[in-house]
Amino acid sequence: MTALGAGEISASSVSRITKELDEKVEEFLSKPIEYEIPYLLIDATYFKIRDGLHYENKALFVVAGIRDDGYREILGTRLADSEDSLFWEDLFDDLKETGLRDVKLIVSDGHCPHSRHSHCKRSGKDCFQG
Image (cartoon, rainbow, N blue to C red; front, side, top):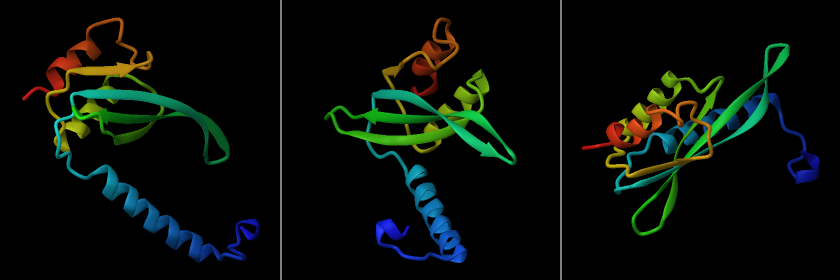
């Protein structure tokens, strides 16, 4: 921290800053979607996350939306152990709760395990209609 010009920082300061950051992130991710967003980009990057005494590989999914005017915005993120159908249903349900509707196209680079089948195609057509 000294190299960043912050000097010494106490454990309580780190806890306070972390709590404030968590609140801001939650506020950002739960904000209502106020525009029509017909296109979604879903991508993931994998991290080794410490869980107790050992590390596990987890995927951090990022969902970006593209409005008709070309503006892009981050709509959601999700840390996941796996990408089963419940994961996708949960992710899409959360997006619908914030107001996402009428998605025409979902682009992903193969993270969806059902992309060769009907689940993701159906999700794009059915989950966000109306």
